[in-house]
Amino acid sequence: MNTREFKGKVALITGASRGIGRAIAIELARNGAAISINYNSDIKAAKETQKLVNEVGVKSTIIKANISKEMEVKKLIKNTEKKLGSIDLLVTNAGIALLSKKPLELNYRVWKETMATNVDGTLLPIKEVLPGMIKRKFGRIVCISSVAGLGMRPNMITYGTSKAAVIALVRNLSSAVAPYIRINSVAPGLIETDMIESLDKKARKNIIENTPLQRIGETQDIANTVCYLLSEKSDFTTGQTLVTDGGRVPLP
Ligand code: NAP
Image 1 (tube, rainbow, N blue to C red):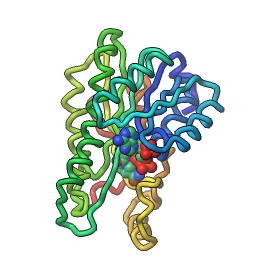
Image 2: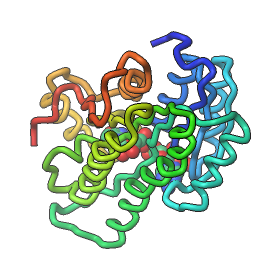
Image 3: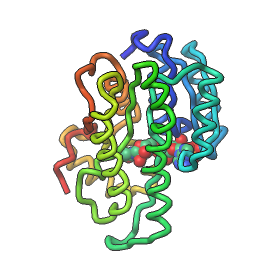
Image 4: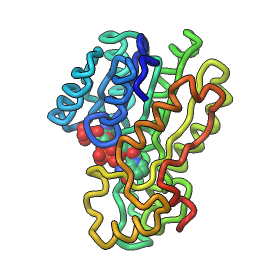
């Protein structure tokens, strides 16, 4: 997409310093939105995202906040609104994947950290932006889940459960916030980012061979799907999870 569809709109993207979040920030900027770039630890990467967003010629701001902490999320929303105005578009993208080496490795510390970042970190920004969106009778939300939330991956029990919770949250919230607010989820398959850097050559080859579209996804693939779900082109769609994985999802 390269329209001015989001001109005059303010977008907040959590975890926009790197990877998929950065691509979403740039794509929304290209389509005219002012961008709030949230990050947690990597200020250098967040500044690089801002540079790329500014090159497009829209307003932007960078805000540090750990999205699993309620008070930090409250400040993130408040500061975004102070700097750019009311939030119209929210993308909850920040997430972590701490994968187990052995199939049945259920580590409670990893579980708590994963749930805090991926589940609380999805709920908290939504909870904070909803009252304003309801008042203004306008809001578009997209939550980044994962195909791991839909499938059976023995080394992804914790991560997959956290992403299944995101999918269920979207589904259940959608009717509660309709008709003025739409909320959907994007479930990426494997996407080329820091998150998958530990995958070796053999695993990559195997994944590509088992992907009908014969490649690993790019961050732009996800940014395009997110943009569609935030745009008026998807005006009759809410509560859904749009899988963007090259066709691989039915495979175990
Ligand atoms: P990534 O390259 O590792 O980037 C993660 C981003 O999330 C960074 O901007 C990071 O900020 C931020 N983040 C992590 N914890 C945070 C916290 N507590 N508070 C605020 N920000 C936090 O990951 P990615 O691959 O782009 O993943 C983005 C989303 O897509 C995640 O939800 C992930 O689960 C999902 N996903 C990814 C894939 C894949 O194959 N890559 C597949 C399916 C789903 P800092 O830079 O400041 O650390």
